[in-house]
Each structure stands twice: as structure tokens, then as C-alpha cells.
Length: 443
Image (cartoon, rainbow, N blue to C red; front, side, top):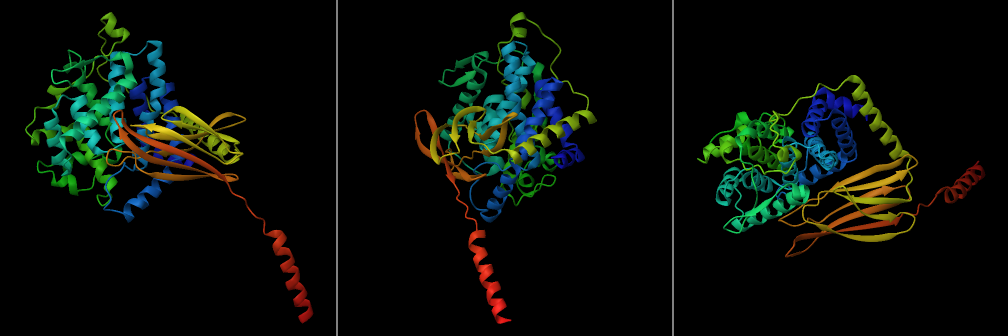
């Protein structure tokens, strides 16, 4: 695991990850904790991502199902995912400021949209972070991707994203209904005050693998669709989808796109929601419209993180679990007894992303493996992964269910099977003795 720390450290990605965690948490110990948990999940996920790359290259004409993340983008996404538990702890204590809540809102919106596709990213940025219309959002997406979803797909995507944001932030945000019947969040009065913070967040949350893309932007968009960004190969459709996400998120590219479409500039269309915080209730202003940067990780902190990851890796090698727990997006859903063959089924709601397999040893809870859920054509995509254990295999299958009025649904099927291993020694020994006897007789 130390080699993974060194690899990230060589291209300054470890420090970048720490600064991202600190931008969200604004607390050094929390940022180190977030960074460590993200690295641990990255260590048990990357090999599966490589298999998805193999699938892509051998089926290049199949449509984008879910963005397959390169190492840096996976690292970035997992940091945003892991920050939520720290965020909720701060929110429950009442110590979160308006600045904190706005950063979390932008981060959560980017995380849930980029995990699905550039289409959801375009809808989320234009309809929920900014106040562009459905028609304007449609024009932007078609200009960048040359794909043409119907208007009803845009409305449905916005409704789904709004529901997820309401679930995350609960009563801290207030919703209103427009005269067209559209549900929107009640917005802050002084949007201009937060322009720099929004730009800082979007720059940090834009996919890291696309850094340097902005210089390739042209008004005709051909360069965006054909040029590589840094070392991102455009022959890879996942990398191309990530580039599209960059255009919709990154402030410079986004402004250039909207200028090419003759839309009003993003700064005048911000639609940040108004959060109910102790600061807001007390009328405090506070000069916190930009994030504070932390000092770099020390050698001792890096060694602490590396030691923690090495210890987890060693525990995974030793563990012989009799049961495991299935956790979906941080919530435990069921447990499976590995001493008997058994099948379980769990219903998945729209937007479910990350499945974790967790066990327990003498030191406590331990992450064993992860699986990212993918989507296709606004439905759960059929996918399967098999995880080996000491005397059996646990298969996870995600399959779509028929859509209903409450949204799309999926089914997670878990099946553990024992593998009976036969020892060849008792069978081989007589054969060896027979051959030896024949050899002696021949002499």
C-alpha cells in the first residue's frame, strides 16, 4: 500500500486529495480521515475498474452506461463520497456555516451527477446550480455531445436530482412551487457574494483527469469532441464522457460554452439555495466566501495514512469471515452467513451508487470489497461481480425492475456458494508407486 501512497505523492495527487477533503470539511483531522477512507476504498476497487476498461475497448459501439473512472477521478469521487459522514456530524452539532452548506450542496450535486453520465451533469449544473431553462439546458447538451434526448427526459432527470438533494439536506432547505408547478429550492438573496466560492468549488470538483482541457475549447466545439485532455485518450468513450462533464462543470469551459450559445453569463444565473443555519438565524455575515487552504501534509501524516492502509491490507489477507454485511451508499441493508449457501434479494432505489462488502475480525469492522452500480437508459443496468472467499464465492447481481410511479427500481441479488476442493494427493500417490514399480521391473 505504501507504493500507492508514493505513486499519488509523485504527481502531487495525494496533496490535491487532501486539499479537496479540507475544502469540504475545513478541519485537518477530518480531512485526513476522509483521505484515508477514500484511499482504502480505492485500493479494493481499482482492479475492477481495469476490467471495465477491457469491456469498453472490446465493445466500443455500446452506449455509455456509467463513467468508468481513471485512478485519479476515482480517488476524487471517493473523497467526495467519504466526506458525507463528517458533514452530517458537523451539521448535527449545529456548527455548520452557510459557507459549509453551500460547498456541500455543490459537492453533492457534482458527485451524484457525474457518477451517472454527462447528461445528468448537464441537467444538475444548469437547472439546479444555475437557473437556466429546460430549453437552454437542452441546447447546451446537444451542442457539446451531439446527442438529442427528449424534453421529458430533462424534466425527469431534474425531478430525480431534486429528490436526492432534498433527501440529503432535509429540512435545512426550503422548496417552493412555481406557477408552472415546478419544484425549486428557495434561493439566497445575495448570490453575488458567493461567486468566488462557487468558482473555487467547481474548479476543484471538475474531473481531475481533464485538467488542461480549457485551452482546447473553441466556439465550434469540434476540438472538445476530438482532442485529448492531458493524457485522456479520446478513443475511450468513458474518457470522452468525462470530458463532457468537465465542460459542464469547470468555470472557464462552462463560460465559454454559454458565450458560444449566446446565453447570459453564469454569474448572473446562480441559484444557490438558502440553508437554515445558526449563522443565518443569528444574522452573522462572516468573511468566509472563499475556502481556507490547509498547510501541506507532513511526512508524519503521510506515514500515518500509509501505516493505516497497510494494516487494513494485512487484515484482509488474514480474515476468514463467517458472515459479511452488505452496505449500500453508507447504509447497512443485510447480512449474509457464509457458513451456509444462501440467496438474498434487496430492492435498490434510483440513484444508489456504491455497494460495500464488510466483515469483522478481532479488531473490528473491515472493508473487504466494493462494487459501483451502473445505469443504462435511465434504468439500472444488469451487472454481476463474483467475490472469492476462503471456501466459496459470493456473487452480486444488479438487475433492473419495471419502472413505477415512484421512479426506477433495481434488484440486488446476493448468492453465496461453497466450493468443494478435492485433494489430488491420495489419488496421485498410488499412481506414483505404480510407475515406480513398473520402472523397477523394467530394470
